Length: 284
Ligand code: C2E
Ligand code: MG
Ligand code: MG
Ligand code: MG
Image (tube, rainbow, N blue to C red; front, side, top):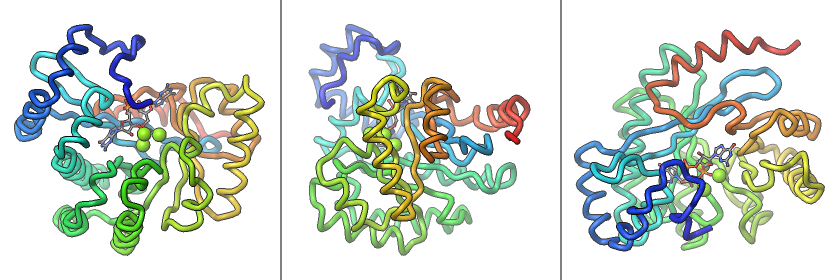
């Protein structure tokens, strides 16, 4: 899962990229510059209430419009950015534009939340707390409109520092979600100890849920534990209607995935919402 830049099925894949990304230092110098020159783009993917057919949130997914290589997904630059210490400035850029978007969306759809992914290195930056607080105040956005997604991987680097940071983020009033759940090692411990309100079941269990008894067992166990601990559970990677129906029968009522929408540019969110509201009436 860590050397994903050879992904052959990625429509954005360009063979030139493979040799190009060998030159990490050059690419990261370009990323620093690219952040300043606003070459990053925010994509979003809707998160749906599977019963009510309503938009609950949108996950923000960063893209880099590289001047020569084209549109790059995070798999092409995120790990390098983490290793080479560039990721926090990217995170600030993403947070700044996400909170500004929340301020604008408030008038159209006040209950909508945006979920932003954090990297492990971000939890080593104590200034993140003050940065977020002043951003939310500046844009007059309710902290609870912002969800921060963290994976077990994000917490593994320095669990003690990470827990302190999560507690401070919770005090600030933002919501926390544990991402990619089921792929790490200390899953159940984290569910009990962390101030999280959401758990996202990793898409590797969800993609083929209707075809795999093992994945049904795993997803079912996660759903039951999460509900007992009063956590919201979100299924990631729903690609087919059978999977949605299966999840509903298993008691999972939130999801996102290509079945509803692939990620698209943030500016398409309000038009998407209008379309969605027209085409999918709430179920009786
Ligand atoms: P993630 O947070 O688990 O995000 C979900 C990923 O699954 C996204 O990939 C999304 O496009 C993809 N996905 C959504 N629905 C489906 C589906 O039905 N089927 C399949 N096969 N895939 C689906 P993406 O956008 O390439 O992002 C990959 C990862 O990069 C994210 O995983 C997240 O960990 C990281 N990431 C994305 N944006 C940011 C960011 O702004 N900051 C940080 N630190 N990490 C980010
Ligand atoms: Mg995520
Ligand atoms: Mg995930
Ligand atoms: Mg992830």
